[in-house]
Amino acid sequence: MIIRNYRVTDETGWVRCRTLAFLQTAYFDNVLNKKEHYQNPAIELVAELDGQIVGLIDVEFEKEERTVCSRGEGLGGMIWHIAVHPDFSRRGIGQQLLYAAETIAKEMNINRFEAWTRDDLWVQKWYEKMKFKMVDSYYHVYFEGSEMKHKIQSNIPNLYLVNTFTHYVGNDIDQFKSNNRVHKCVCFERSF
Ligand SMILES: CC(C)(COP(=O)(O)OP(=O)(O)OC[C@H]1O[C@@H](n2cnc3c(N)ncnc32)[C@H](O)[C@@H]1OP(=O)(O)O)[C@@H](O)C(=O)NCCC(=O)NCCS
Image (tube, rainbow, N blue to C red; front, side, top):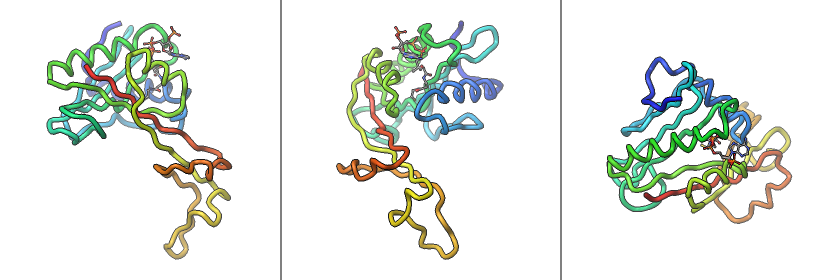
């Protein structure tokens, strides 16, 4: 297994690896059909085994404080994507990708990584194992069909909402407890 920089020709393998990895998480329907690109410089690494992309990490990093990260001081890096193909999980690939990205980040004078994830306890445990600390959270609330009744409606004539995805940053999450999908979105941070 080698860890190397992402190349344009990796895109199909990158998309497949990310899709399969996220399928087993609360982000199961957050499917991309092409690789994300960033406004700022980014560390974009893949893990390759026998010609297959089995892992990936993308970290966009700041040239100016607070232009990418949501908190903290100094220049930070945001982990937008980290994923390991499920057939190759628990072999240390995620950890190696993270450490490789961290080595590069330190050379760029980045002082920390920030990452957001949902309420998959095993993913949160992985971040904790990697010495990240949970520092912030809010909620992702989905409204589907009748869940929207009398709560969320369109004010455009003849336009009807069918599904809605919202961010809730208040303290009364219980009001949405009958909703089918409510996720706590958690911020992890690791300083170098
Ligand atoms: C989180 C992730 C990157 C870890 O990669 P990995 O190479 O499998 O993990 P590592 O080998 O570095 O670390 C292994 C540890 O991760 C956790 N872990 C990984 N896969 C797991 C699974 N399927 N079930 C439970 N724990 C798991 C365990 O703590 C495990 O330690 P253990 O085997 O001693 O119990 C990978 O599982 C993944 O792609 N997850 C889905 C995508 C995601 O949620 N990304 C982060 C949000 S952006």
